[in-house]
Length: 181
Image 1 (tube, helix red, strand yellow):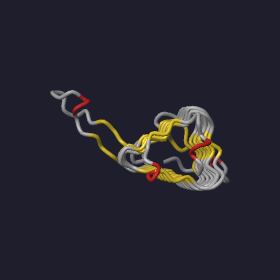
Image 2 (tube, rainbow, N blue to C red; image 1 turned 90 degrees about the vertical axis):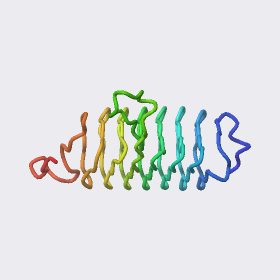
Image 3 (cartoon, one colour; image 1 turned 135 degrees about the vertical axis):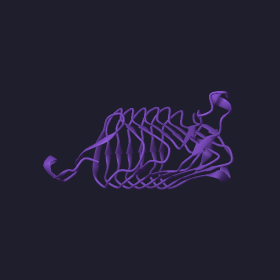
């Protein structure tokens, strides 16, 4: 990848910690931030304006033919793995860690973080404004509806909506064949 041509992008990393495959389409103001982690992306990664990929002390691994739309944020402290042919709409937040808050005698900012890996399977569509929380496992073929908040595991080809996200149907089956989780 020729980093010299990406003049309007913000790159805050050692180039050894970032690998991007062939034929990327990276729009202006992509922010890649890597502290002690890494970002690895497959071929044909497409990002729109304002995308933040912040590996922090974890890793972000992105498959091939993935699009990440405007102002979406991926925080990889606990690790994020994204399969092939995934579509991430605008304003999505994927955060692989949580702040501790159990001890009321201590400020939240001083309490320990809990890091939990997020795995997103192949052929997933995450709708605009959705939040994917630490420890989530999205099975292949799923759709996560706009503004949904997902924490936990999904079934393959499930369509999830709401806050918290719940299964409303399975792709390819009629609604009466779907058993809600």
